Length: 405
Image (cartoon, rainbow, N blue to C red; front, side, top):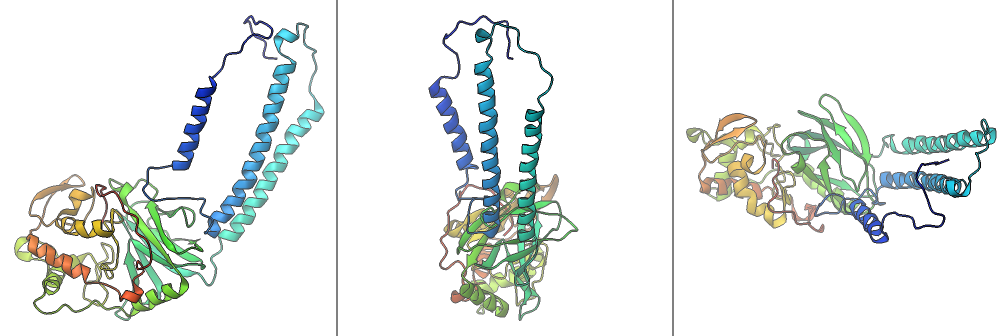
């Protein structure tokens, strides 16, 4: 075996990768596996607070264990054969034989047994994860270019319709959450790695599966299928609350009605512009595309803004915390310039190109935009229902580009 025409010297030096280079290669591979994408927030499919990830972890343990056994067995056979039958130690003509029944039986039976065992483990895992528990919290998920809407079909709002929130999904801990996902335009994919697996959002279909976590906190989610110019910025947050806090949020959200602004205030002027726009300058009404619970605004073309003042993110996760507050004015004024492909109209009076077509923006003054921003900030849940209150916020890159509110 391995006969060659190259001359060799018994016991001579063997050439190979220098030890330093080999170690550097291993370290590089390890670093790539550990760091993944250059995200500022930890995303981990190894978060064992999720039942889905725990099941996947134990499946992986078996698969990796078998892989190690196979690797060691094949490596041993390879090196044993090379060492025993190397050319410079065996000058005689090798013995000729046909077949080895015992070896062939082993090479067939062992892989079959491994595949059968892994198949049984896979079926068992699917049987545990796929059924939707009766006690699951139900959430409807809508993905569109380039934002998310999360509705609670079992939580009717006193003001009409159901409780809905844009780009921030609030769930309870220690309880399965059944997500029914669809898309309003192209194929998207919902994935919060710490909480469970990825599922596609496909137009015209509704798929239901579960996520969960035992640990309260804020988790990063992303669209995981290329869906257009701002796919990378089609993000969302999942805020997991202890059951008592979650119930407080949900009850307040059901009873919520947008506050009525004080006459003559910036919020009152912003409310009028939000509902009516400014026809004289071609500025479209925000209410045509957005819903605000307890007001005539019932648009469905954009994310629900009912609790906008409570949210800590802007532009489908582009900015967080104080940076989101700072960017609100510019976002209202010309969101397509900040997020390629954003369908939100601009209000700076300039022409701009959207999806290959030239659009003419309406016009709002900076003071009018500030009034709309003041109205949006007033749309807050009661402080006891503020789901961000005890959750740390991870800062995001201020120069990122992103999606709709």
